[in-house]
Image (tube, rainbow, N blue to C red; front, side):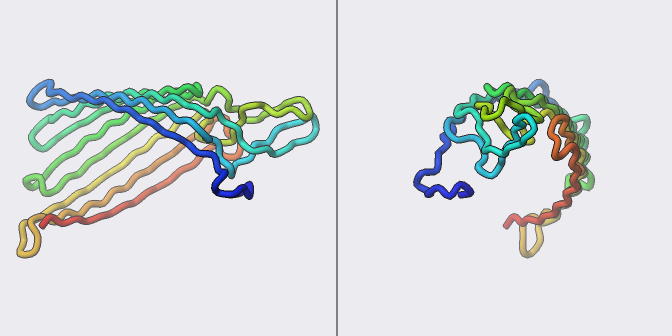
Length: 219
């Protein structure tokens, strides 16, 4: 590793996860689902590759990250799907997340899908919005008396206060059976993503466009 320590002395990380989910049919055209997940992490959770600048009077020093060794995670998700017609479907969902580091986030998503040609052609549009606060020990900049280091410190932008949105479009076409396959499926998806960091000095905004395509066959 970066520190030069022997691999046998590297700190470990234990992870435990428990998930519960339930679904129900509200009507012949509407289904809902609720899911809860509990997670526990214990061990080294900082990064050996990130160094945190600490301001000592007129001098700045770079020191390794230091994060709590334990972290409890809670996530609650709700989702509903509804058929507006035989060939038109909508879905919406909400996810709440909170952990013992003081991080709280909210995610809201929605999707609409239309089918044509006996369901052989599917076109879908989706959107997602996300917002989170910062972890309790995260600071955009750290300062301390000369020679003193904050016991907890991080330069991880994923612990900063942020919000993001995503928009996506998907087209899927299938046909078959043929002499070679029972069903052949092709798909293309385009996603546009934007994320804003409100208190992370090195990066305030990032944008991405992701294009993916695939094909599969059922024999």
